[in-house]
Image 1 (cartoon, helix red, strand yellow):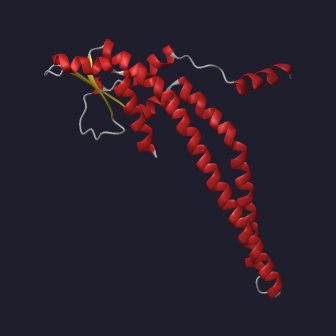
Image 2 (image 1 turned 135 degrees about the horizontal axis):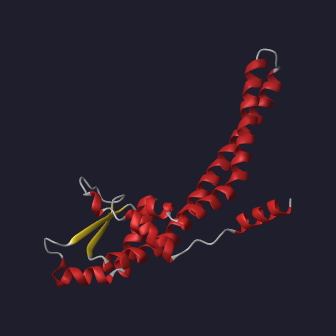
Image 3 (image 1 turned 60 degrees about the horizontal axis):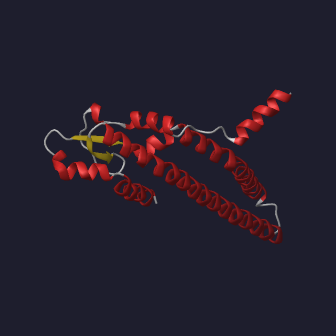
Length: 197
């Protein structure tokens, strides 16, 4: 799944960065050509947009996490009750409790899988949306600073890179200045509530 997301970034890089390939074709790939390294996933999550989006996702999924935890506790309590009373329960009561436990476990599994799948889809949407803008920022930065190539260290094995070729911090700063994060409505609402107290 992660490879598919970053394959999209690579595709956008090919479209959004023609200046890089123009520089290569004009002889910029000589021995003095600059190569940059970026961890685009870390960069995305470190921008103000990325932090805000992940906080919004956390707020969105907190009620579901709490519901899952509540159901986990119910399952654990029922398991403990069955263990404790196994010798004293009738066969009918054992069967009833066993069916109830299986049903609760099935619902819990389904809820957990659905929550994980929904969260992953929402997270991929965040990464894709911010990633598309980030690729433009990388293209602008690379063109302005004379880079012939920028490589995602999260995708390509890099066995050595001088400290100066890691452009992740510069890209985060440039992204944040190019796309200032907007305060979330939830944050604004909570601030307003606090102010009225």
